[in-house]
Amino acid sequence: MAQDAPAARTPNDIVAGAPAGEWVRIAPSDLLVMDLAPDPSGKARRVVIQLIPAPFSQGWVGNIRRLVAARWYDGIAVVRVQDNYVAQWGDPEGENPAKAKPLPKGLPVVREDYAAKVKTSVLHLDKTGSRDSARLDLVLEDGGRKTARPMLGDRDAYAQRTLFVDGWPAAMGERGPADSASPAGNPDVFPQREASLWPIHCYGYVGVGRNNAPDTGTGAELYAVIGHAPRQLDRNVAIVGRVISGIENLSALPRGTGEIGFYKTPTERAAIRSVRLGSEVPGLPAYEYLSTDSRSFAAYVDKRANRQDDFYVHPARGVDACNVPVPIREAAR
Image (cartoon, rainbow, N blue to C red; front, side, top):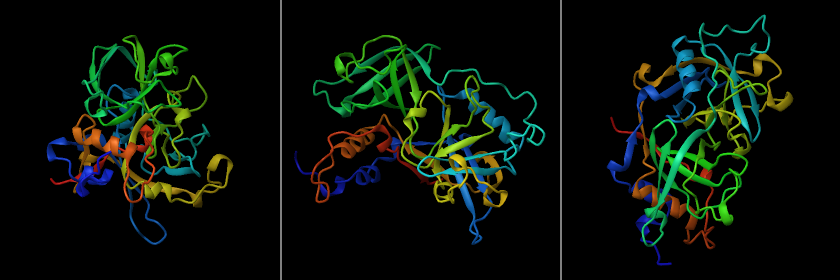
């Protein structure tokens, strides 16, 4: 392999050199701004979450917007922090019907699937078969169309294929009992047949707490992944967003000493003062992500899979989708 020029030896070099036209601005109305009570030293603690776009989890996202509009989240707390797993927030009295905070009237019960239905998928490659040229065209059952960046050659333990859709990591498999198996064991062979497409649990991603099925959760109880990607939760819990700023204000909280990381006493909890849409918060920075359809993102993925330099003597020759965090940065206004 030819040695890279010094300006592009690392994934960060590629991101830093990405042209301005390859970055996509995140609408402030698609951001949640969660302000926790200050830490013991008086330092402010803010967490900014990007809500996931269609075709994923829109019933729950709609509920979250309703809960924000009703100021329902104001005054609840982080109630659970389990090491190498999740930080979870909600109503501390939520399991006690006599004391639980009433939900807004008319909040819908979400019945949608955790996965979107794909009618057809077509993989496009140039003659070289390179990752840089790969494109997956998807036609959804609801009539929508998406173009995705597939992870070529990188086998996944949880799905037939992993890919990136509109800046979000996702997985895909044929519908039915075979949807985690690859034809002939080859993850790059994907027939044009009906499939499911779902977002995946990576570090910093936000999901909806729920009870046992058939309960799907309302969006009143949320969690953020603060450990190794718990991919077993994929298609079992709704993913509604990802933390794009301030994850340390959740991941660095003291671990709960109760069962599965719940705090035993009210004084242990981190109070949530307010949750607002980004469009309601004066002075909030603008944010943007590197388009996952861009050439720079393709090079970034390849570099994360095949880095070889003075430090990386043995390139991995592969990479997990959750180990390709989509670059997100503050943008100039």
